[in-house]
Image (cartoon, rainbow, N blue to C red; front, side, top):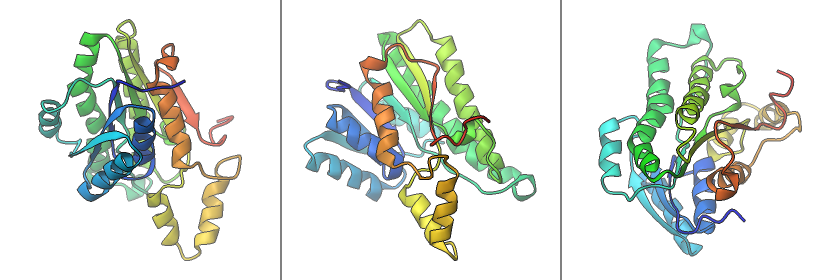
Length: 251
C-alpha cells in the first residue's frame, strides 16, 4: 500500500525536519523527489541520504517567496504528481510585539510561497487531471496559539487557501489537503529548547501542550503526508488532518 512508484514529487523546506522526513519517505516508497530548500548544503544532504538508501532525488535551491525563481524552476522540471508546500517560518509575539514588517515577512513565505508553488505547478496537474497537493499548516491554522499572532494568521490562511483550491477544483482529479501538526521534535525546535535557561523544563512544558504529553516525531507527520500523496486517499480532498496529540480537542 501507499506506493509512489512512477510519481514525481516536490517537497519544499526538505533540508531538515518535517520536510526532510517527507522527502526521504516518499523516495523510499518509489517517488522521484525534488528536494527544495534555501539551504543548499542541507538540501544536498537530504538528497545524499535518499541516494544512500537507494532512492531517486535531485536538489533545487529556491526562494519560494520569489515567483520568478519558482517559474524558472518549473521550466526545468517535468510535470509533478505531488506537491508538498512544507517550507515556512515563524514569529513569537502578540499584537504589541509584532510589526508590519514581521507580518509581511511571514506572509511572503507562508502564504505567497505556497501560492507561488500552486499557481506555477498546479495548472499542469489540472491539465493531466491528477495530482496531490499537500500543505503543512499547523495547529495554529485551526486554533489561536498564544503569542503567535502573525504565525496564527498566516497558518489560518494556509488552511483557507487549501480549502478554496479544493472547492474550486473538486471535479478535476487534483486533490488539496492540509496537515496541521502540533509541536514536532525537529532540529529547529530542539535548538530553541536548548537556548532556554532550563531546557528540560522547557521541553516538558512544550510537550505538555499535547494532551498525550509528548511531541510528535517528523516521521509521524511524514506518514500522514504519504497517505495523502498516495492513490489510496483518492477520496480525500479539502481535508485538514490534525496531528497535534489532542491539543485542539474541545477548542
